[in-house]
Length: 393
Length: 61
Image 1 (tube, one colour):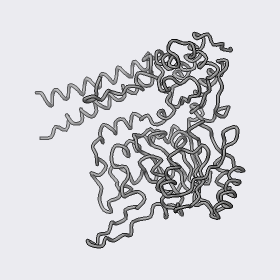
Image 2 (image 1 turned 60 degrees about the vertical axis):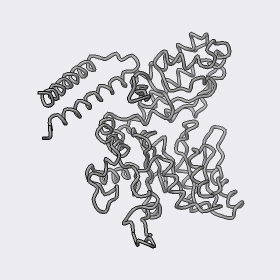
Image 3 (image 1 turned 90 degrees about the horizontal axis):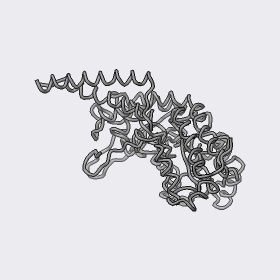
């Protein structure tokens, strides 16, 4: 079935249980789906925009209230919506990083953090990870000292991913920000895999900035996200324009320079707003999400040769698994080769793995019902047994 | 001039279909409904028929 012309209807989540590591937290709530129907037109949010002509002043629908509630939700002072977490990184990097400045990221940082520094001409320096794939405060302090010795400068910024995209590991952000602040380094916390699915308290973890992804973890259309800041930092990153043009002498009111004026102007913002009440509520049910995830993790662990590469026990529903000594052994002789696993999953109505991947791969159980989690767990065991792999009780 | 009932019925019908869509997601891949889900689906479909009837009345008669 087509939506229009050559564009197929996308019914992946209606026809399958989706375990794609990046998609599941961004699936829309029913409320967001309905808002998308009503606000699909381009500048739909602007119907009631009046002086001073800025997004966070719109009262119908109540964008002004949403922005305040978003900041409260993260326990930060000011929040703005941005077109994806990456644009939050960019706004902060643009504000603080000058050419040749050393900026700290980690060995598990998302590439868009790197690009935001590169775009400023900054020097990217990585805090190494431990053998267990965690970033710890000792390594952070050592790297800060090393970078200061190397460059003679205090880094103007440190990026830390609260949960990283590679392993889904939960890092000790509070301890890391404490170290960074001893050197007066502001910290930007990448909450792309936490904000909207787990409770995040920005003040408690010592964040100067919290960035979240609407389309990754806040049940929102892409591209959407949030950049929240402390009051002190908000004055810097959300500074307003002061320019006056030379020929026409135009000025631009209270537009925020790093936001490039308004950011999300239609379906993305209204989708975020519509999902927000349910998102605010769902973070309190994280334990149930972990419980569902563990059903699948434990099923995989029963398959001899399979190893969980993420920290264990799991603190997140995104998990990296190594099946080199189980499913990949099957792939060596299977007529479908490495595609047998995704094919067997597809036949059972499970989607979202990379076709052909049988060595190291990731999955995410977020948003499943318990019945669906049990079904996925059972399916992995069943596929293994059908392939002759030993499965423990 | 403006058919308010027709405009409302169009959106309400799409919202009802959205609720059914969500039920398909929650029960994928088997789409086996529990008793409560069958009752919910039945109520939604009755509501949808009502909205279609409003559209027929407002736009075709």
